[in-house]
Length: 198
Image (cartoon, rainbow, N blue to C red; front, side, top):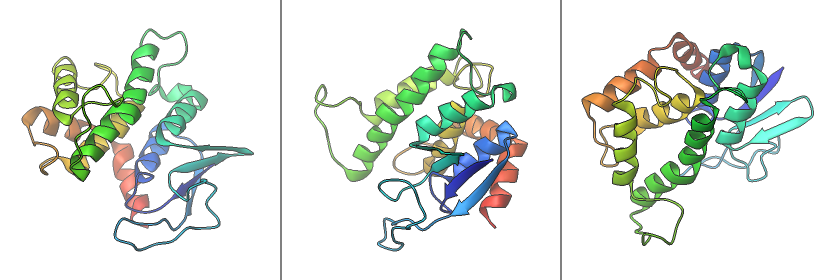
């Protein structure tokens, strides 16, 4: 049984979606986190070293950081088919997109949100317009990040775009709107939203 340490309206919400997609047995342990508005607090019941979410516990194994959790879970439940396994030709692209999400996309959005300009070449990420040029080129070739096949990378990227699309950080375009709708119209997403609201 997977235990997901979760705080509503946080990055852990998308892992309910992932667990539903995987058909994995899981339980949710709600924890308090520190919020950007100053509310919340560290929760002694949360095994994350910095009091953040998501975190999962699988027996004695504790995994935190979104990319590590996505990879751990899709490797543990390969029959769901949403994480290419070792030996699958799509595995390299899958790993690349997971790493790109954590190492380039999120820092790019945070830099834009914080209105900080990191000189090109001094950081591992680029500006959001360069990120979106790659995303747009990728999605113009297929309905999902890996082409025809939905994956956990789409859960991470699609739900992030859902949050920010139409804001000053992310222009709402037909291409992105179609992508977000494909991701969030999945039955597992609806089930996850129902559990998020509990």
